[in-house]
Structure formats: C-alpha cells, structure tokens
Image (cartoon, rainbow, N blue to C red; front, side, top):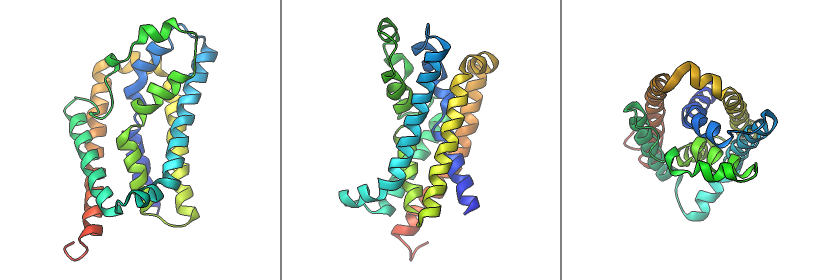
Length: 213
C-alpha cells in the first residue's frame, strides 16, 4: 500500500500542478493585500481538497449510476492522462486546462476582492481539472476499506498544502525559475506522468481482459 500511496501522491503532484497557475494567481490577486491574497490561496486549496475527498468517496458510486465499468473508465482515464503527459513533454501545457489568456483578468481586477476567483478559475480548472478528477476516481476504485480510502484523502490533503505553499510563494518561484525553468519542470513532470498513465492503462486492460493480461 505504501508504494500505491507514493504513486497517488506522484500522480496528484504532476496533475494538480500549482506551478501552472502561478501567473494566473498573481494576475488575479494583483493589488490585493497579503491578507486577501492568503485568503484566495486558502480557498483555492480547500476547494482542491474538497474535490479530491468528494470524488474519492463518491466517484465509484457515480460511475455505477452512469453504468460505466471501472475498467472502461480506467482505460479512458489512462489515455487522457497519457495525452496530457505528451503535451507537457512537448512544452504545450495541459490540453484539458484552459489558457490563461482566455480569462479577462482586467475585468476581475475592476471588481471588489472576491473569493469566487479562488474556486474558478484558480482551483478549477487551472490546478485540478478533468485529468486530476479522473485520476482520483481511478485510484479510489482500486482500494477498499476505510484505511485505504483515508490514505487517498490524506494524500489529497498533502497536495493541497503543497499547493497553498506554492501559491503563497508564487512571486518568488516565478522570479527564481522564470518561464524557462517552469517549462523544464513541466516537461519533467510530463515524463513522470506518462509512466503513471501507462500503469493506469495496463490496470484497465487487466480489468477488462483478465484472460489476456
């Protein structure tokens, strides 16, 4: 189980990638006091944790209600994650997350400080999008028992805290790494994510075709 938890944390780390949202976070909170900026980061990371917890507990039930088998979802989710990893390694970012240019930052800044931007678009979909949610459901479907489910939720808590620290250090990280450094980090994470996606695909094939694999 320890190895599985490490895989889960690794998958969360590269899919729920706070570094991809640093520029957007800085733009949306430009002019905010440190107190308000801290609130935005806290709400964003709380949203990530709640999303992970919800789909960990209810994800498999939701699939059954829709008549989708676990194997089919594993295979589809693994392919989605693999496509994401290819784009990351090519330096094209996450294809299922919107471009930051699509958000009207100036319009947001004209409005009074609000926590709505912490939920959308910072938390959802910039940090946790379809790929992250799919991965949560896939891993939660592979475990049983309160302890194992709790382990996934704890992993989600760990990643949420990591995202909070990254957002609070957004200015320093952006200055330290620059666009080139963030691009290199994205490519490395894409390579790791490719390995995770293959594990998910193989698991899905094993579930669908137990006699062949």
